[in-house]
Image (cartoon, one colour):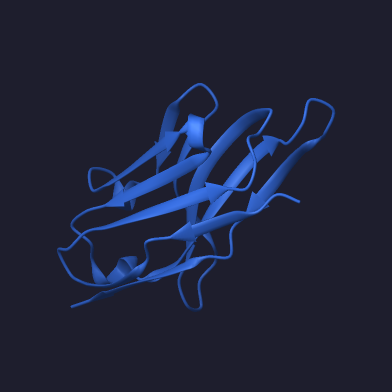
Length: 121
């Protein structure tokens, strides 16, 4: 059973920074993408940032220049550094990994339980 555990959320004032971390319970055989999504109250879940297999990155326009995604392959972790936070960044942030757990498994789409980020004005 694959588990993703997020940490690093919390309450921060506008202009502040937070660093989210996501740890996987196992070392994947192959990874298609690792990323972060968020869901604000009353809104649909949306992509924030992701790293695609070879290392290229993709960001939501609203976070470009302020957020940085990175990964640690050796430790099965993905991070999201969030700077210059704004109240509209308030949401539950979810870690997502699209990967094969073993050489014989299908590519699974795995989600963490989410971590709350609240930015006060």
